[in-house]
Each structure stands twice: as C-alpha cells, then as structure tokens.
Image 1 (cartoon, rainbow, N blue to C red):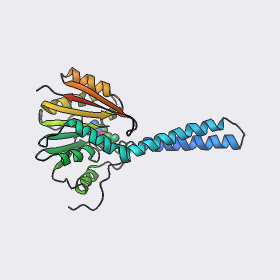
Image 2 (image 1 turned 120 degrees about the horizontal axis):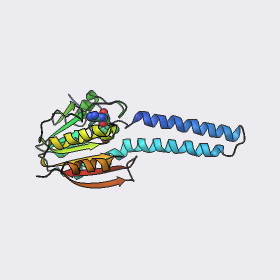
Image 3 (image 1 turned 90 degrees about the horizontal axis):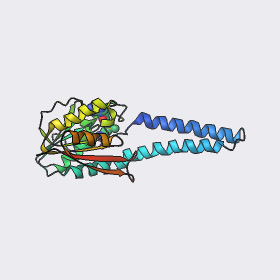
Image 4 (image 1 turned 45 degrees about the vertical axis):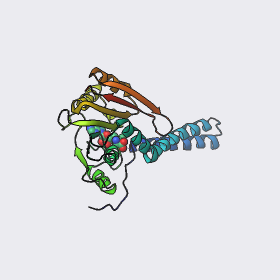
Length: 239
Ligand SMILES: C[S@@+](CC[C@H](N)C(=O)[O-])C[C@H]1O[C@@H](n2cnc3c(N)ncnc32)[C@H](O)[C@@H]1O
C-alpha cells in the first residue's frame, strides 16, 4: 500500500466540543436578544458567558490540531527510548504515540491497542489508524490491535515501555481504572517504564503505581500548549 493522504490524528472528545459550541451560541444569542430587544444591560453577562464556552471549544480544537504533537514528543522523551524497545500505546486512537514511538525505534517494535470509541476521538477506527500508518510510512513497524486496556492480550513482562495519552479517564469507574493500571504493571518487564498522560486522575494513577511497588514521578501541568492542561506520571518497575 502507498501513502495517498496525510495522517489525521482526529479531534479529541468531538461531542463535548460540539456541545460547548451549541451552549455558547445559545447564551450569546440570548444575551444579545435580552440586551437589544428588551434593553436589559445584563444581557452582556450572557454574551460573555457564552463566549467563554466558545473559547473553551477553540482551545480544545487548538490542542487537537497543534498541542497534541508537543505532548506526544514530551511523553516519548520521558519514555527514554534507546531504539530496541517494545513499546505499547494504550488507547492509541489514530496512532499518535504508537507511530511517534515507531519513528524513534530502530530494532524495536511498537504496538497500539484501543477499543476505538467514536465519542472519544473523531473518526476513531482500526481502519483509519492503519491508514495513518501508511501515510506516515511506518506500516510493518507498528501493530494495531483491537484490545481493551482492562484486559490486555499481551503476555506478562513482555514490553519495555507503556505510553498512554488521554485514555484512562475514559474508564469511568475507579476499579476499572485500577484494573487497567494493574494490566500496565503486569505487561511491563522488570525495569520497564510507564509514561501516562491525562487531564485528570493523574494522582490516582501515581498512587496505584506506588501501591504496585513502582517508583513514581509526576510532571506538568503543561499550561501553554495543552487544553485541558495535561499532566504526566512516569512509573518505573523495579528491576
Ligand atoms: C481522547 S482519545 C486519545 C487517543 C490518542 N491517545 C491521542 O492522544 O490522540 C482516547 C482513546 O482511548 C480509547 N479508549 C477508551 N476506553 C478504552 C479502553 N477501555 N481500552 C482501550 N482504549 C480505550 C478511545 O477509544 C480513544 O481512542
């Protein structure tokens, strides 16, 4: 297969962004109506409130179009790849970290797993992620699997690095997140490193890793180029 289109890594939480735009528009229109039809000065308050929802939606789109690539590079820098590792991207979506890791590897291999939920990422599907591999010229160097973070199909102690961005908060129950974190610890080799980025619950992930005996460090929040601001936990399994 040859590359015909540019890779597209999608817009995160597309329905949330749409809802913010609709809410903002309703508030702005209501505010303008109250100000100019009824003469209520506080209509400007609604206009301002609506504008903040528009601004929030805009910042989320800016993250998806620009900021996520800087966050990808931060995560992969913290993964400290030498080139020969096996890297697992949990909740790869359209392949952001799995493809980024493959480009830094020489003899190693990159695996991305996901359940491909459309509400979490626009155009989310195994086929589109495979198309991104072709577009980025890394097909054959990345394996994409339909797999659930709560029950990974990988063998225990089989990967050197686990990376993940904006995935684990999508598991809404704490015990399910704990299950996914235990799976990450299970598949990591002794001495292996997990680099997990998310906009919330990072302290919970850190505590879970500590409870499994891993050494933990936290980084961020990265306020300049991620929205909502992302934080990263790095956890190292004892050798
Ligand atoms: C916001 S997207 C982020 C995708 C990618 N990591 C990125 O940064 O572009 C979250 C991803 O987590 C995936 N996800 C949600 N629940 C999951 C689960 N239980 N197992 C694996 N992936 C999951 C979604 O399908 C989605 O692709």
